Length: 197
Image (cartoon, rainbow, N blue to C red; front, side):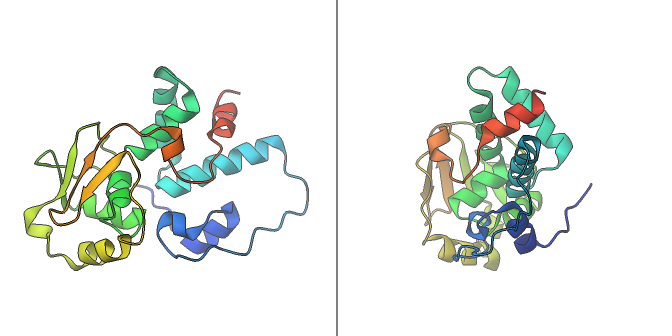
């Protein structure tokens, strides 16, 4: 499996992403990348795609598969794409506050620390559905990284399409997320334009 080993904060600066969006720091990055010349339309589209791939930790082949699935579904393709990415199990675990970063969430899911509707799921790209209950497996409830993440996540707001119960260490997917409920400075229309060429 391919692994992106680029330093996170350096990549955030290159793509103009706030590191707090990835769970790394509460401070916004002040330095923006210097552009020597005007960026072309293709350059803007490509940068937007790279930004979304980096935020969700998805490589090109899988991202293209998500785009094709979003194209098949009814509705606006860009909104469908963002919804598919948000409904990944690792992304939901991060949004619920059970992991400090998306990378931590991905690793915890891979190690089998989470249950979906009482069944152990160790696939980070597993697509959760409305009504699913995500909980920490009983034997992993005392893990230090999960406890630290919960303490840190109390400062952050859980999106409206999710509900979390900190005492039971479980969360519920109340509904599928709307585009308004997905945070981030992302223009998904540029990605759709890039792939539709």
